Image (cartoon, rainbow, N blue to C red):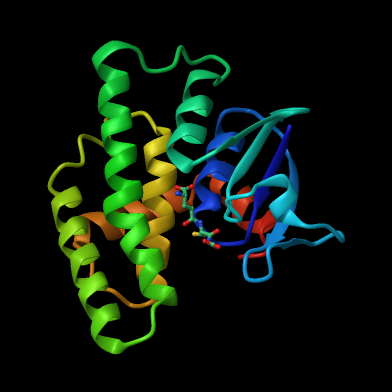
Length: 194
Ligand SMILES: N[C@@H](CCC(=O)N[C@@H](CS)C(=O)NCC(=O)O)C(=O)O
């Protein structure tokens, strides 16, 4: 199994989730600015979309899109059945929300020029963090068990800390709790982020 990533990006979510699930992927670092691989190579030949993450489950079986990758990991976690029925729909609902309504506007705010656009996008993300803080179902986002959704929420909260975005106290406690997990520490170390 190979995992194409770029340090600290949304790909960190899948990296954390893979380690939490007991996988030991071969990591392939991508320069998302030039769309090249650390070892000489053209990333576009691997993923015509050009962005990370990409999970190569096995030779010739690539999977892209964070929501699909996290859902796959949830369904293939050793010792965990994987969400089924309504629970799975809830998980995908949460992943889609985090991906399209939090991660995407946040990511755009890093690349779009213009203070006004950045302020608007970050204001949108800030409001969504308030909503999420009110919905945390237990120790983690969907209950007392760490799920793949926590890996994605963690990445966006890490970005919030980087840009000093104010977030509700509940999320500050949450992010410290998630960050202390051994798999999260391992992923951060492997990406050179500690
Ligand atoms: N729809 C994709 C978006 C992933 C994404 O935004 N990746 C960013 C890093 S956070 C990226 O690689 N950007 C470079 C690019 O778009 O060329 C997903 O959810 O996986």
